[in-house]
Length: 72
Image (tube, rainbow, N blue to C red):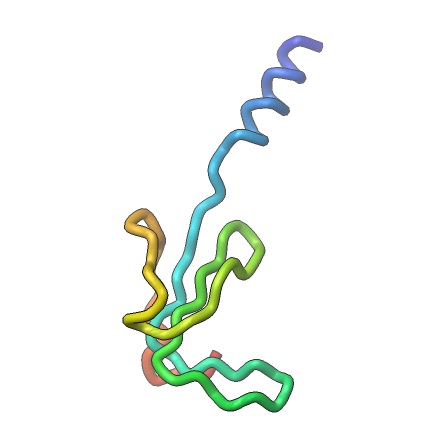
């Protein structure tokens, strides 16, 4: 039981990885204006922030995925 509790505690403290989709045109799906040169930060399975290159900082430890020339 102690081992199981330790494993559960350990996994809940692990930081979730951050991915940054950078450079694409963001389509929001609700009819809003497309956002060119976008940055989308994803932590784990959640979108954490959306902005544009130059106005939204990408964390230094983020995995950067280029979406230049793509619609996302």
